[in-house]
Length: 125
Image 1 (spheres, rainbow, N blue to C red):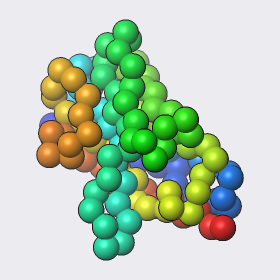
Image 2 (spheres, rainbow, N blue to C red):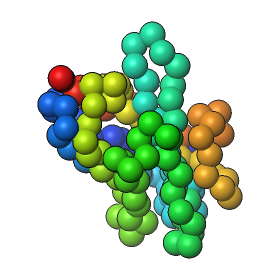
Image 3 (cartoon, rainbow, N blue to C red):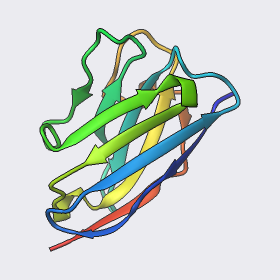
Image 4 (tube, helix red, strand yellow):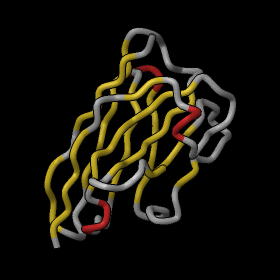
């Protein structure tokens, strides 16, 4: 079992930045694919970013966040991060980190085995 806990959410004005963190416990996740998803009220879960454990692989991003968000991980600390810059009101959502025991990154939430409880991000105009 892997337990994931997100932190770093909050309220920010448009154009601002936030850095989300996700701590894993219960089992080392160095060989897990990690991802960030978000969900707004009345909407389905939306893929944000994914990263594998292999240093040679490039992360993958949703088109809506590409160039603004950066996913990274620190296996020694069992942490995954999401740096969010140039935030827009449409980025407002609950953000979830997720872990998957698979080879390649994925934008499909159904491929992930473990989920955190989420952290709220609110961007005002």
